Image (cartoon, one colour):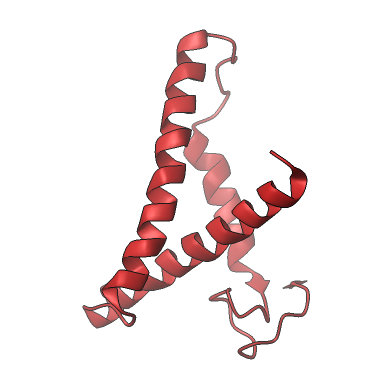
Length: 110
């Protein structure tokens, strides 16, 4: 796959995944979706396809025995990354960490 193709695919998945996080937040806080279910469904389809490919790869690589055992539970690293990300302030319209809508300036870390 050419780099421009992979970049476009990653951009699409980033928007879909971020959108689903917002959709989930709407569901949890409001008890309903804030956007049309067909739009949410489209995002779900994109992410489910990605997840299926990743699940296949994870299963195959675990079975290969090529990876050493982790020293710590994988959740510990995830928790550190999530805590760091929680400090993130962004003006990107695709980020739920705020800023002005439509302001696509680079991320700011505080």
